[in-house]
Image 1 (cartoon, helix red, strand yellow):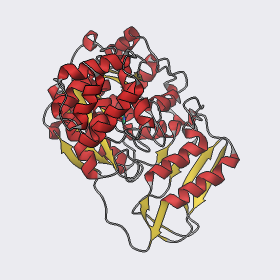
Image 2 (cartoon, rainbow, N blue to C red):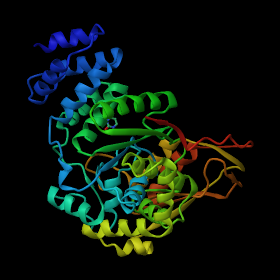
Image 3 (cartoon, helix red, strand yellow):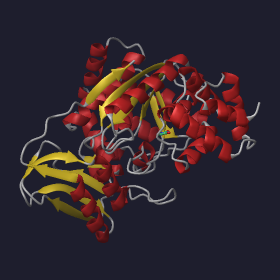
Image 4 (cartoon, rainbow, N blue to C red):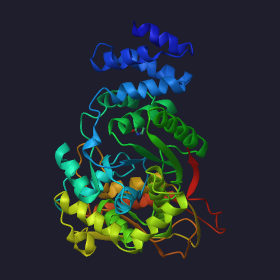
Length: 433
Ligand code: URA
């Protein structure tokens, strides 16, 4: 087999066989196929797409390039959840304990912040002492003991994806729906769960800005999951407005705790109820309506919050901060962002809100930057709210006062204020099965 022939085949719009795809991924990881040939192939996929059979074969090949986690050491059905990333997306910290409190195991590997989006691992690490890097044995023990564990993704999960993503990043081939589907699903298959719930975010703060693209991506990922023998469902959820009120690491943990106590913002609570009930549905806990009731019950009786505290404790963290969030370290400075005119907020460029939070120290500028766990934004007003000129729209938190000016410029430019209220948009656009 020659890579040249495979590039030509794809360039001409033909489908590759499973054997050809396996050869290509194996030889690329081994360093036998150079980056320039793989770049040409990726660009051909960008223009010609891939069939369902090809995306499945490529996902399996990428997944098998590294460790295929065997979760059989954990009893019962294991359900995973993946979010395509957003701003203020703290849903994992809420729904994993909810699902565990309903009797379904969650053994989850999460990522760090990327660009304008935050990462669950960074958020969890704002809890003093909590470890997100556990051996397989400790990971399984935490899940068996508490019903859930959320840790960082190990380096050997789908190494081919790491290499391919780095190449896509510099060859303008990131935003190809089949390549995104392969990238996400290869890691999900390798992580070893029985069921997968995909939260595909859509809107100005999401990777996929349009609903049509979000649905197309969801369909490809669900097909891969199902064809690979995993029960898979996707929800298309709104990311045209930041989720909840808090953006930033410990600020988001605090809001997650409030939501688990039943005091969370309506949008965040509603999205979490949808996600958690779909995870329970996938695990066979009943109809969607029955699963919704289970979710509401474990929030109301405090069981879900106790599960989060148990996980924190089992991963070496100080669980007292979960019961008393005032114990979280505070940012040295705070700054109110005032509305420049009166009217209704009709649009928030959510990506820019995420960037403003990162500029305050909540995100990384480079891969190796240190995160300031207490930095971020609390939104006082969101789309649909009325503001008076001079009224606070948001409060910024940072460890250095000089960070406020540039972040405020970015934030002010992201918020549109008009005389007429905008139409409300749904929180969940579609369910793809
Ligand atoms: N997230 C991933 O893991 N891979 C992509 O290609 C895009 C988003």
